[in-house]
Length: 458
Ligand code: ADP
Image 1 (tube, rainbow, N blue to C red):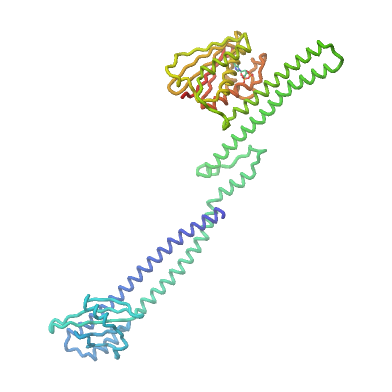
Image 2 (cartoon, rainbow, N blue to C red):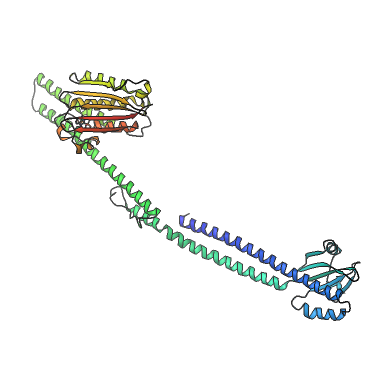
């Protein structure tokens, strides 16, 4: 079911329910009021007859009957009976008493309660007791009549209410549809606009209408999401083109080396040299592909990542060993600012292989980009974090490049003489993100760099 139909339907249902409850209560109130009014009339009627008949002893019953019929009951044909102590009819304004059926139970009830109202067939019956003070005699007066006028009135009210109810519901359906359509108009507009946005053209944006209501907020949020998607598409595109470019360079070198080698017959020594050079290029390719694989692996949300408590100083010492084994010229010093009292201040919940990659990249860069090939590592901690500072006194990074070095394939101009692909720091950033930490770079061109890694400890 369309939202518009649903809203209109629910709206109609609610309004119809309210109208029905309102009409029914009004009708029952009116019905009660009409009934009370008529019973009061009958009571009056009975009392008047009693007063005339019993109080005015000399009144002529025949005359009273005539007056009674012609005047008092002109509006309603009220029938009045007066009974004595023995339940014998002493007065009746109708000719035949049998026409006015009454039961001994009703008479009993009237004598018991002094006043009684009842419905009999289509008529209303009211009975009351009247005492003749002079003769000390009790009389029972019964009055009955059909409330034709009241019933007609109620019938008309009922008809008017039914017509009103049906037409109101009908109008509610129409207005419900119109209002629902009106309120959903901005959503239909957004729907149409969204259908025009394709993956190829994310530059299109939704119009934010009056800029005030919830729909405008939705459009704004949607536009922001589009911008983020667009940015990530751009990044993806530049990543793919950079990666292909980086992969093509060593492959092109390998191809031309092979072509040159095949141009003529060579001595075994020459072949050996060529193979050595090919091996170096091949090594570069492997390194690059490994870097790309690491980058893919360090994607956030990889559920297969095993996170366990790891002492950060242990990881650093392992990386130090490994790097110094690979590069005899590297000098790496690791120091605690303050010796921890407990293991927890330097233990973090992390993935060992990723943490090794992180510090390997940072320490390798520090040594690689400084003339003295020296990296100074300092470990500190506070209440919640363990902070690892990797410092060097190398070529440094200019202020404007400090943000960019964490983007894949970005390399600073002053680093062009050093081997590298510009992937390491983007991997570091992702690894720190995965561990819920931060990486802060402080650097001065020509003075050196400081990478602060802040990781939450146990
Ligand atoms: P790579 O070192 O392989 O080029 P990285 O992603 O590790 O890739 O570094 C990106 C760039 O950041 C480097 O090319 C270099 O320009 C700069 N950089 C990284 N670390 C340092 C450092 N310690 N000193 C100076 N520049 C650095």
